[in-house]
Amino acid sequence: MARKKKQLKVVFLGGVGEIGKNMTALEYGDNILIIDCGCTFPTVDTPGVDVIVPDFSYLEDNYDKIRGIVITHGHEDHIGGLPYLLDDCRQIPVYGSSLTLALVKHKLKEKGISIPKLNVVKGGEVRKVGCFDVEFISVTHSISGAFALSITTPEGVVFHTGDYKIDYTPISGEHINLSRIAEIGNKGVRLMLGESTNIEKQGSTISETKVGETLDKIIRNNTDKRIIIATFASNINRIQQIISICENLGRRVAFNGRSMKNISVMAKELKLLSAGEQTIVDIDKIGEIEPHKLCIITTGSQGEPMSALTRMCNGEDKVVVGDNDLIIISSSPIPGNEKAVYNVINNLYRRGAKVLYGSLEALHVSGHACQEEIKLMTTLVKPQFFIPVHGEYRHMQQNRELAISLGVNPKNTMIAEIGSCIAVSKKGLTRLDNVVAGNTYVDGLAGVDASILKDRHQLSKEGLVIVLVSVSVQDKSMCAPVEVIARGISLDEEQTDYIKSIVEKVFDDTNYNKPEVREEFKSNVRKKINRYFNNKLRQKPMVLPIVMEK
Image (cartoon, rainbow, N blue to C red; front, side, top):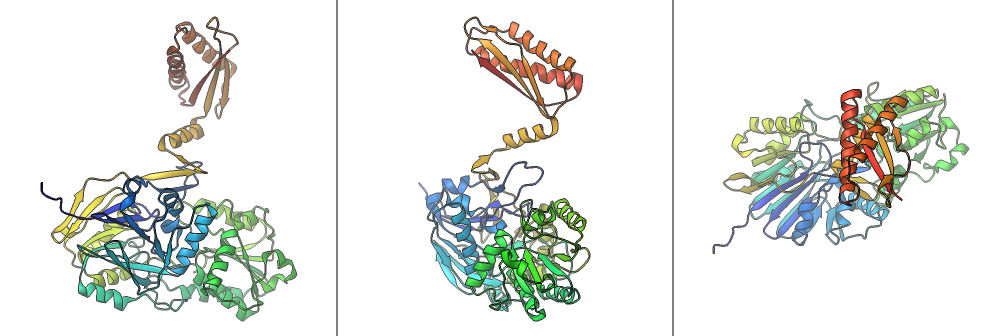
């Protein structure tokens, strides 16, 4: 019997056709290398869900093949799924920058998960992970310690851009290593996986230093105000700029919000954030500082319900907002968060504060490459094959078209979807059978499947009708009147009586002596009542018959 030839397979478990939940696996023989393990956050379409992570079924079924996880950077959409993967697939080594792994370690501790082997790497280092040699290449992004990956496989080099922008004046001083990327491209790259987030934006992404210039001007021109700045806790470079501006202008700085406090401590320990001994003041002691000599850096720039800024606008935080405050929202709303962000801004105005936000000032710049930067990256890498990632379908299609315009053969490009499995060889890209993939919805400590979400949608839109039926086991008769309880739907007395008569009629027509008929009775009650609501009232509440046997 001929031995089956090994193939290099790229398995897409998240981050394609969507922004968030990034996760890709490279597989060759008995070796699997996982790239990123992110999450995404709930929307109105996922009521009651805390977080959404990839479906790990394929990895759990192939656990013995997993040789390691490499993380491009420490944003939630790249590390947020790790606690849920490592809860079942423990002791898998994880590789990333010092800040990335500090964030991972903190996240695992919070979930009570044993810490696997965490391997800190620096830009330029190469690590052997199974049959793969992974080179970590420094790139600039909106978080420190971000990498692109050059992965040498038995079928050639796979280059994963990670999230990047080409910032020629980075705050950290660590530039994107374009010369090394060019060297890798000149040696030959079999496949490039290129991020697509800002493909629709022409030109190049503005440097982070421009935000610093804007903030400096605003703070300098508002010497009589207390300044409150809301931004992403992970954006260490922006936080450093704020601290430096405040030190130059004689302001003290306080951190508000759990993640802001935690990440600032991590960053200081890793020497990624610096401040004078007298600069930082504990948030509990801000009453000792004159308001116009204080700047508070806070979480909540996305209008998150439990964030510090949301608590402030609702009057539920130790920081009491008033007419002496200038509040700066130093971020842009993530798609889907717009309403929550503007609700916070409206409530801050109601409290008398002045608010500056993205549409009024240049207070935020993206961490993702625009068209000209993507052109440069693709030109330097010179891939034989190209698959766009990190974007919705329209983003990936436009990125594919851009790669073709730069000389990539159209036959050598593909659009992947979640669950896609693509084989890579010198001859080309080949679609294989899809693997089991999709979303895992996490609610508290439990998983929530799609059927439960469907029920929640129905409850929120149509309401609930509970029908209580009391049955005497001894004589198989109803021993109490039928009760009808309605929630989220209005029933008058006539409608309620009619529902009761439906139940009584179904019971009279049911031979309740047989145990297997009891479920049939509830099913018939549900069908008859559903038909009544649908035909007579044009409504579709969830109907829940409950039989109590006495």
